Image 1 (cartoon, rainbow, N blue to C red):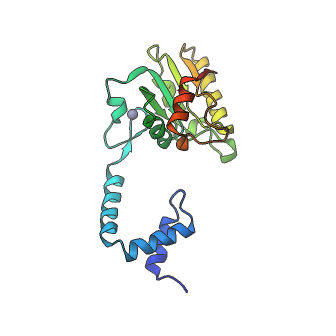
Image 2: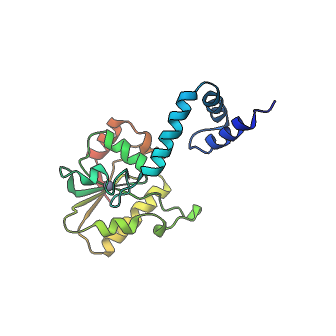
Image 3: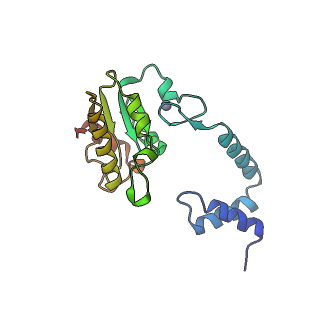
Length: 199
Ligand SMILES: [Zn+2]
């Protein structure tokens, strides 16, 4: 049997979401179409609001509904340290550990020659332009895989080439090799932050 085309369309759209496979997308499509009348209305309004109002912070590229995100605007944050992450999900997970009080920089990806992603495709230049004598340390919180390591080394070289005295450190290997910062527990993040090492 084939689902009505309205459910098929919804199913196909939901299937594009990260982490949603065909089984879950069918289940969600049927639920929303059959049981979720009020939820569907609120969901479509909320989606519209998010798409219209959410943008990325002009300084760090965190998600925000303003020019600058709440972290960059917070005068209490330590401006002498910038923690570099692959994406905003990693930022949110590190932030929820409560351990870190400095600023962030979201790269929006990692260097990956296999996938045709080079240094100029991610926000490395924007990071370098934020560095000055006032920034004493850059902490690389990149996933421990080939792309994360390559990106970290590239950033370190560029900082050295620019003759900046900024110290470069990375999280200790508390994050399991090949693991994902996005899913690391708060305690793992706290431990790997406290035991961070120079590179
Ligand atoms: Zn920001």
